[in-house]
Image 1 (cartoon, one colour):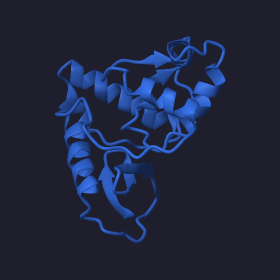
Image 2 (cartoon, one colour):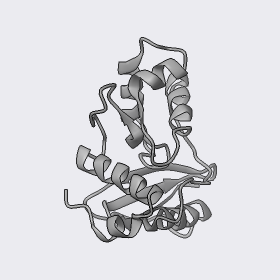
Image 3 (cartoon, one colour):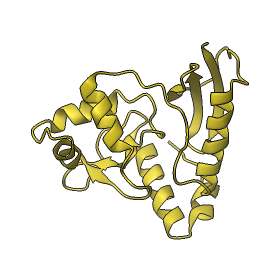
Image 4 (cartoon, one colour):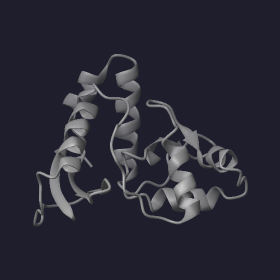
Length: 167
């Protein structure tokens, strides 16, 4: 079964899509479209957990995911899920961890193909020199997410949550 709904976040409106296997997509949109089965269990659970995340009450998502991608993309996405909340890694580090040390660009490409931008936390990946690079949601959102997570880890989440993203 295909299900779709919309959810307002401090970073803007997101479209959530799910199958019976789990969440398939979470992406930014300008305006809502037609919903399909918005009460689907996977969608409701995802919205509850997103709300907790943005309130600073959730550091780890516990959701069924329906990820579609190549074997290489799947390896990258699994590795991204291991980056701890509030911490960052680099494209080079991810490439080394999946035993493809020369595949930094391919890691970046896999991050760009990630349809679950927050649930599979590609926002936690920086360039080797620590600079913000590449993010499907835009660098301002990537910066906001990193600051939010670091704030939560240091007890400052309410300040960040009350400040909406202005991209």
